[in-house]
Image 1 (tube, rainbow, N blue to C red):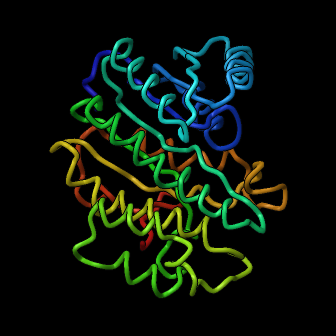
Image 2 (cartoon, rainbow, N blue to C red; image 1 turned 90 degrees about the vertical axis):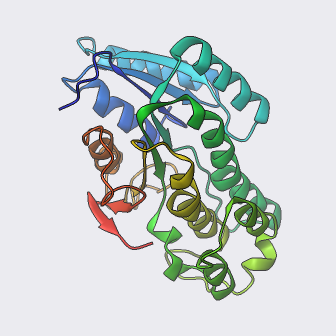
Length: 274
């Protein structure tokens, strides 16, 4: 039972469409009141998403707000963090959902994928962590393509290093093209940067972030599954609503640290291997 009296403040990044949008919509339809912050890079698309959601759920018990946030822009991260500090005070859940995926990517696009899906997410998380409530949660939207078994041997060995720390993770990210040279393409992961970006994110959430969190704060990593979104294409098996199921399940788990669940990797509400 959550003894917290005010509605929980939940930030979802990249939420004007896709899984982020469905996470917000599922929570908006809940009988539990929340203070929901939908962020998106583009203000027009973000405001439109909020308008659509409000009209679809006129009787929602939750409050819904749009805030501009481009995770790849340092100044946008800074102004968003300032707004959180001055307006919300604390955040109860940060859902790091914003990500990019290129098909047949160039080297520049590969670097951009690592930057947005890993480096920028870490930057935002490091800024928000001091503003996380004492029993707050951070949820990383990842992918089974981020599992170590999908990576090339060089990256896999680097991420399995027991001395892995944030400095080393950034080093790997900065030299990604070199580190990923022995990646073996497959039908699911035709190129290295998207799986690699998620593997780096998983390693951060599994090894580095838990040491920075308070005694009752938690982090979870989630693969929503292959969903029919812009990123997943209309060939995917699952709806975006189904993709939102596990993230929402984790948000609604008791607000008390559970060592058996903390820093674990989830898919379909079950723990998976990294």
